[in-house]
Length: 385
Image (spheres, rainbow, N blue to C red):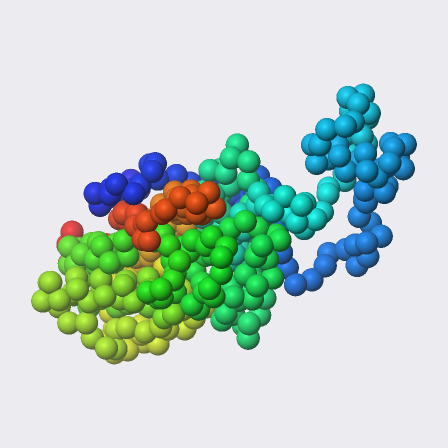
């Protein structure tokens, strides 16, 4: 089936064409090895890290030089003969020695590391990370991806804890993806992506969710649907409220009713969205189409439809929001609203680099959305196309 793309006009903030990838998601995950990131967790892979880590003393002993000489070489200071420096670097490469990031930052006052703080490594965040990593190449900075929400009872406020742990000695600035709470005041440069609603928060990047939601619902209306449901997103995020607003506005513009029984919470989670859709679709007068606030929620709706024996798109049309790689690989392939996620990651990286270097940035950078028509939307049963 041919894939159709409908774009909104690009504004002046867009720095490049969309970098959307529809390759296999597992191969995309493998590409994250290029991030050069240390992934922070609340556990240790090595039960005896001090015993296994190569130290500066080990390098000095193997190279037959003093610890001071090794320190000079790895930190690029003068006072070491070229032949000796070459020998030390050879030993460093052979032994896999890495100097302490904390110690180096204390000496230099900078780490040359940008932190990327996120609740978990799900498809939305992964695409943003890929955009940042590709854009960071050759810029003299590494990315450190840190997952701070390790359990449901710690899911709110994880970014505040992460910032307090990492700011200053482990990173020079941070990009925070979908923060759950207002961020603490800090001197460290911070940029948010799809933020918690906080008028006094840091600069942020997002997609024009209002226009994107209207595109989604207008597409369903143009197909002939009049009973259109909505699975909402995370209510602490501005994007969820704006997408609901777009659903309501598009219905109102077409003189259709936003029925209260046709809207329910999905929290941007597949399992929650499935349960919400099961309830909505078992009503006597069920919707013939559902706009889900993100693609994972749309997959939850597809799961519910399958469980109830409803065919998509013959019995039910479904449209998502994000265009994660799985959207193009699903069966049927998901109609959705595309966010240029990799481009958004690149823009956020540029913004935090500007802040690190003392340059002003826009408070709000917004990128346009696109309607991607695939195989999960069609005219309602009984209505010819």
